[in-house]
Length: 296
Image (cartoon, rainbow, N blue to C red):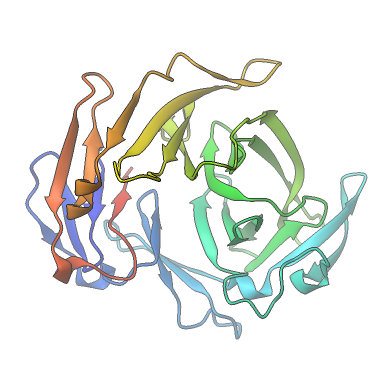
C-alpha cells in the first residue's frame, strides 16, 4: 500500500489523489512508526509516564511503559547478571534533565519486542521493551552515542550514528525474567562524516521487513541560499569490509527553503523531480510535524 500523510490535527491524506479523511482521535500525536501513531500517555498503569501506540486504520492500541524506569543489564560471557536502574550508570547524563529519557525514535520489531532511541544528542542509547514484562532495558556495556535513526531490516536491528557509523544490534533474552536486552553491538560500516557540517541521517528499508537498507543524509543550509541537500546511499551489508556503496550517491537534490510552506515534498528518484504536497495551513500545525504512515 502507498503511504498516508498525517497532519497534527488528525487529518489524513492518502496518495495519489485521496480526499482528506478525519481521524479526531489521531490529533496530538508525538510521532509515528510504520502504521502506528505514538502518543504521550497519561500513565502506564505502573506509576510511570508511559506511551500509547495507536493504529488509526485497525483501531488497535498498545500501552508502553515510560522510559523513566528504564534499567540497564550487566552481562558476562553472554549471560545476564543483574538488573539496575539507568541512574546506576555513571556515564549517563544528569537525571534532572527532562530530555534525558525522551523517546527520539521507536520501532516495532516482528520478534515481539519494541526498540527505541532514548536520550539526547551524544547521550543516547537503544532500549528494548517486551510487552510481556512491561519494562525497558538497555546494555551497560554499550556506550552512550549520538544516534540519529533506528530501523529493522531483514532479521536485524540497525542504528545509524551522527558519524555515519552503521551499527547492527543483536538482541538477547534474559532466561529468568524474559526481558530482552542488547547483547552485542557490531559496527558493520564505518562512517566518515565530519562534525563541521549540520546533517541528520535516516535509515529506510526498501521493503517492509527486508530488502536493501538505505541511508539518507540530509545536509542543512548554512548560508543565505537556504537549500537542504539530500543524498541517498545503499548499505552493502554483504561486504566483509563494510562500506557504503556509492552507486546511489548520484541520487540527490537540493530542497529550497520555500518548501517550508508545504507539509511535505516527494522526490522522484527516476526523473529527479521534486513535488510539493499540501500547502501548509497554520490551523493544521501542532507540537509535532506532519508524519508518514505506512499501512501493511
